[in-house]
Image 1 (tube, rainbow, N blue to C red):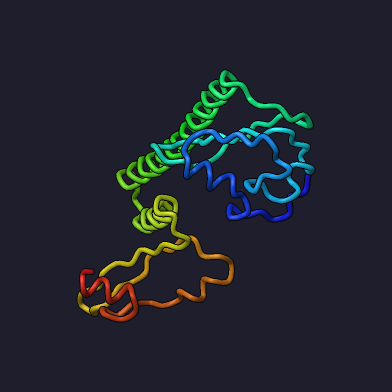
Image 2: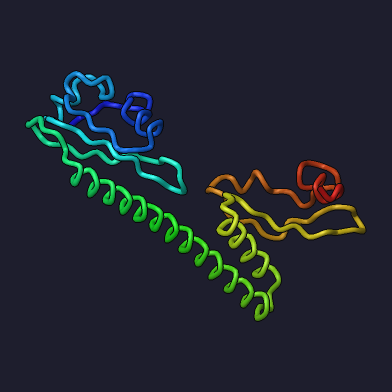
Amino acid sequence: KDLGSLRVEDLPFFYKVIERRCPIEIDDPTTSPLLPAGWAALFEIGSLLVLPIFRKDQVVGACLLDYCQARRPFTSEQIRRATTLAGQVSLAVENGRLFARLEERAEKLTALSALSELIVSARDVRQVFQEITKAATALLGARVAQVCVDDPINRVLRPQATSGLAPGEERLLEFDAIPYGKGVTGWVFESGH
């Protein structure tokens, strides 16, 4: 069913479940101020049970259970079981978040391992610099990375490798040297900040 564009502000039941931190039973959804106008008819809701979903003692979502078409109260046993279900939903969401973080960390460790192996075995320093820029974009979530080498005699930094530039952007970084103290890179290098 088309809901259009709803915002959390359009869902008063969500604020009420956050405030009360316990299940809310809405026995007449057609007249309840907790539901957006027209929801009861649109979804053919007879009775509605709104349950908080917790994460580390904070309400982070809501689980909605309803009797379609018929209005009837939820029993205390149904509310108890629904509360258990909402707890399981919370665990599933948290497990999904943890799994995603572990996958991201594994990808970063794999990239670091590959980079370490390359540094130890590579004979071409330019290849090492290029791989460092690729790893920097992956590990740091940066779009562009560049490795510059210090030329203390001329007091400049010399670009050696760049990754992440879109086609046509290469010309933006076509320069032979960055003077100490010039631009962000030169300033950071000279000041140490």
